[in-house]
Image (tube, helix red, strand yellow):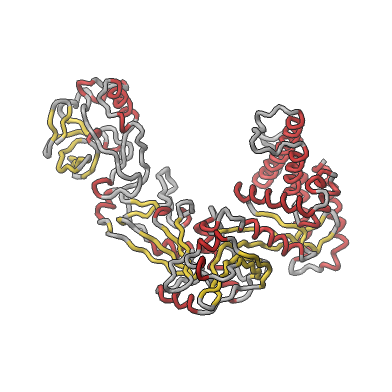
Length: 586
């Protein structure tokens, strides 16, 4: 029983609900206590609904019926009418609460004020003051904590296993808000199961996948309906998110796949010894492997085998890249580079995927050389499996893309589609190290003017935006401001102050142009108060130049176009665009 304000509340006591935030419509409703367990009370309301609440959310109905609404409205409660000496236990886990731990803490503003009064008078237990309110619905489990991916090399192999605590399961497990209301959308949650487990097993070489869903018990549907919830259809959610993939029906099919000889799809473009740490990640290779190595293969996703592997790779994108979209294959413009760990085990070579990168080739106009037969490689996805991260594999994949581009004279440069901050930092370091090693003058050659930047970009297939970032790195390097122990915000060197102001001015100008481009795309040429008139004019002219180039290319390269016949007129149109762009750049 619970002692409240000098009265004993037991089964059959009449109470009033207060302070509920999750179900505010039940506040001020009355009912009878019909059950008790640990720190929860089961209250059956007069209307027939049963709800489990904390003792802090119930008040004796008769004693406080007249005074409670007025006191709550005033924002303070008299201690003679307050709950006293109520000890509640801390939830054992923030997530996955079932049965007796189903209801999250519900404390509204008035109840918080009441707790503050109790704390001042020594009636509130200080150990609970740092408790965090849980927003997850009852009977739910965080999918990031229960989804596991494993790559196996043989039937008896435990393989490389990793969880998705830093993954993006909200792209698989989510509830669509079809009514377009303010109701919370449950993402990254598996609802209605006790101790669920989702395991996805791949053949380490061919990536033949199989997934399994297990749970200890299933929550009764009647309990879920009381909370307006339903069971998560885990199998359907995974299949819908990766419906393009050929999942095996039985685990034996994956085991059979590992028994078959496997060779990576595509052409071998790089091979180097595997670091010891990479071998140790794959169980057994430390003793059994002879000459473990890392191999890079490149293929175009336009054949049956390459399309099958490309689609299997996309199942990893769903889990490991936020907002990652799947590539559409077959398409001869999609280039894929895979990185495998290869080892000799029991007189045969076994492979385990380490990572991969995808890049799309599309047409580009070379405004410096006035050439229209150029193309550009846009890096779309770069994935390194979690057990192999922080070991330099992403930079190896990036250098492989550069090597591919430098071997084709028609490729203008390499760009990256919406790079994440981590990828951009890796890219800056990798590109700076590459230029410092291969240029005679090192990074200092980036500071010799626009002509030098263009030549370096042509040689190393770097886009102009990345060259400007590397030029900033060269400026800091030249000024001797690359010491990581020095905070640039507190440094008073005149060279640093001038450099930072110049870079900020350029970044502000680029931001202004980007805002103008977005406004042109969404609202035509109307001006916004966020951009100055001059900035909008520059943005509009740049957008017009882009539109002219796209329209001209569509006429030439469209189904009815003749590139040879219209080449001269296209050059004239690009000359006009170049004039506009030169004004924008200046």
